[in-house]
Image (cartoon, rainbow, N blue to C red; front, side, top):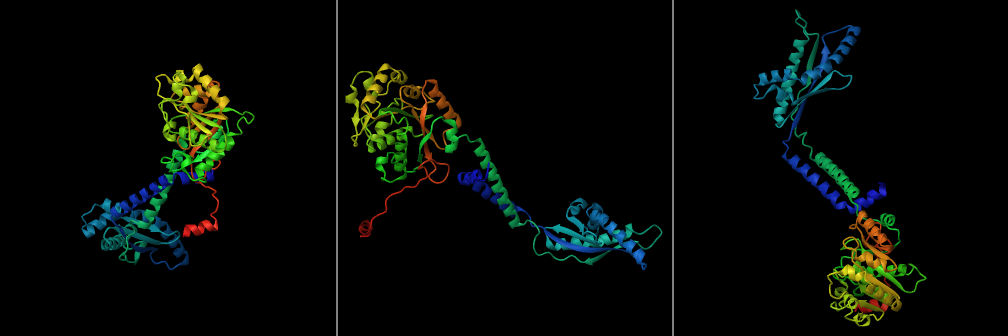
Length: 463
């Protein structure tokens, strides 16, 4: 993934990243709130050798002190000092527990030791730090006094008594919240990348072009009003969805441009990808462009065209195929005189047998001779064979692919279903592409280009 992919991922998965960030911040805040504050008090000790007046001896003593400081730091972290402090202060605490509160450090090339004691009580932390420092002074005197001597060769002196801490050293609320936010965002990005990696749905035109041996002839941007107003006749003339279908209409004319009577099947891989509304709106757009069009409802299992166009559904294709009604009598007209519709008719028990019958082939031939373009709304390709059977009798299939829902495997299998019967997709319609940004195609970006209002219109609007 390059930077552009991460930016696109951030736009599409921002909610996951944000939720993870806020969740980790909340957890950090809770843990910080529940953590007992710890106060630290420190005392400083100076380590030196006993009275040397000679410069050479003083230098050697200084080197000796430097070597001892490192060992003293380890001693302070052990339980020997803690045990003496417990006995001296008569603490109700084990030496091991007290030792865990004591830390010692020394700066490089110095003989200064810093003893730090942490405790939930700031006053107790100061008392313990002073006690540890004083006990250690005595302990060093014992360790460094040679047998038979009454004076130690090296001594530790408290140079800075422990002070009373006023602010806790832990928990650090700002640091914890910042770390929680950074960690949460990192986890969110990781989850988003994982989801993107595991997600096989098609979200870009480039991805789709590699799967289908046919051009993308249009993209219909997502419109939240499409459920209530599925047809473009109910939209403003310059609405983005209306413009998208005009672009689709124009691009469709470049498919086999020398042919004057064309038959196309509009289908998809699975239900729910918008093939029926796409077929209906494409038929409307073609009729608005002056083409003589007929829309055939070839989906005999779940017919929807009659419902969208508010036409009679009881008679139609099945009525003609079984010989109960002539084709001319079954065809219904619409408000646009260039658009005719042949609805499905009653649902038959054997849709596949009817669609592959010689009567169906004869019906398509008859419609081809009468109309400039015949659009057949076919069932999806993967659940049933009806769509592939219809595509085999047409000039090709227009495959509708829904952005973010149709998967790579589904498109690949759909193309294989068409090729298995000698048909092929001649164009791809990318449906419900992002309204803004993303890898849309054509007028799939959610913008229109309506004419500006005239001065007289503005004045009347204000009136």
